[in-house]
Length: 608
Image (cartoon, rainbow, N blue to C red; front, top):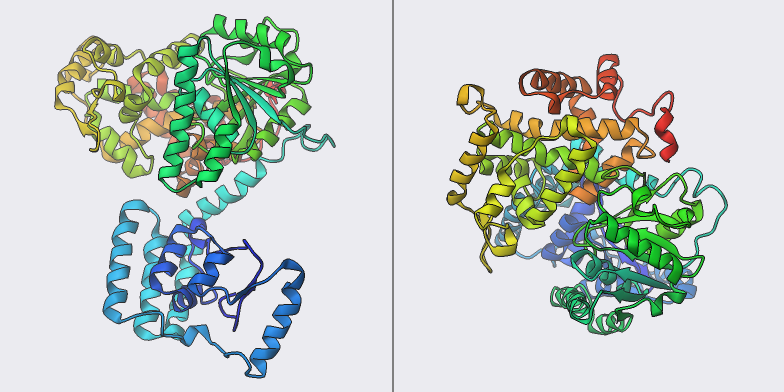
């Protein structure tokens, strides 16, 4: 497109260079021509962000020459080409244009600043700095030399692990739309025009926000007026936040809020198409709600739960409409995080799944359909994440060293800062739930209870492993170290009472290899349709670095045998938590990638 002598577009056409999101740089002279068409600052912004711009903005900055109605696009484009050939319009060769590049010193400053920013925001991703190097080469030595370097660097990057991981993730996301016996049955999704959300807490208000932003009418129910007002105010705060960050226009914000209605009874449920229960993780409460909504809602209404850990068969135990019960597990904050984990039981109808997938796409989520079990696919896979971190701490490893190494690996937060943000109540509840189902591989750390006993509750009260003050970054709190020491004394697992000596790499592996191990069990039990679904879920739900491809892709990239041998060694020293699963052992010993499809499905694959 940029190599053309002119560019004609329709209104609101998207234009951009997204190559960096796939681990490579723009080719065909894109790194050289875009700066010469739109100016260096805008070109750098477009390439490094991979975000497209609309044709209207493209015309303002010089990327588009004219915007025409769709029905006139071909006619105008032909005439424009004829006018250029006849010299009635300028014959512009973008590779040789210089007027928008500015001086060498200005270009140097722009690229220097972009490099500093890339080092902070795109760690472990070589394509950003490589792109800036190529742009700079062309500015200093000319567009033709820049194109030659572009081709050389592109060839190197396309073979990199980073590019392969990002390309894998790109196609894996698209594969989630194919669900056997659901999307291939000829069924058509029914449109959800009105959705009820039960519970106006953090999750419920976030779900309601996501729905109204996509023009879906929402009924938000709470148990009393006080809680309802809090829920509505949280939704309003979510909308204001989007407004302040210029992610939403005022008229769209007003329209979204007009789609919300608060209630304290079921009178508005008689014509809803979908109900999403989003109350606390309390089994009797959820069972009571499901019994009530089955009576209050029309026969076609989907009955969904946002539970993050509880088996759906238990949630819907007291209802007759088993075919309409499904999990709609959002991730916090629900209006921001892109994953929707759709959980089906053995009795959930294909129509209910298809309808919920359609809702997910409407609200700009990536729906991943999984089977039913404690924790489902994502939370079950990542349950060992915090467990492994607590084992290491009680073996004498520094809390803040663990968090630092995990963020350097690429996750946005370490396991302890994540606990601070999620709240200790969540950590206690989920540990209890998993311990009852997987007692053989649950580590009982007293650390969280000790923190709560000492008046710490994470970000909620400004004191956890870190100190939280408004307007400043969280700071490690040295006063937490005596509490950590007390936990170590109680667990008494340090060999001969001394801290273990481990390398940085071993710390990362001792936390993430047990996650890979649990992912293998999830694959073996048929909780996910394909291994790549777990990759997508780990990236979009748990913020596993996309440039590592996802939890299974990453494990395959370093080798199943290395994961297996490491876990086997640690299990002999530190116990059952690290014991390799039979699936991992078989794949490692036979040299089969973890992502390879199973040759013969296990009996439990009926979950999907």
